[in-house]
Length: 70
Image (tube, rainbow, N blue to C red; front, side, top):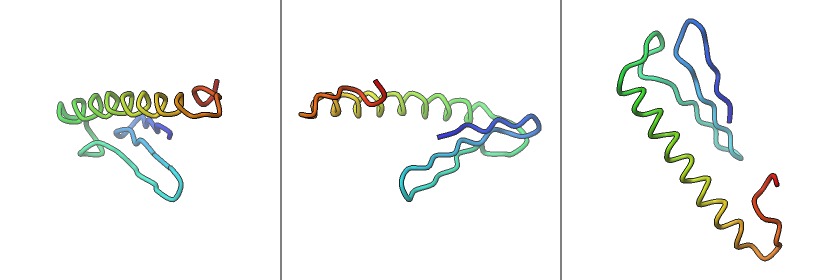
């Protein structure tokens, strides 16, 4: 995942996972609306909850490695 901020247009979030690629941006290239801000906040909240769910499942694995990256 990578955020691509641009000085003259709205940012783009790129997600690549296996064979799936997704680009997320705002509703218009040249400005950001209140709906865009609310969408970005919801996306961040849901991504944090997704990460927590993945970590909880990983902790339960019998290999005892704990959370990835530690």
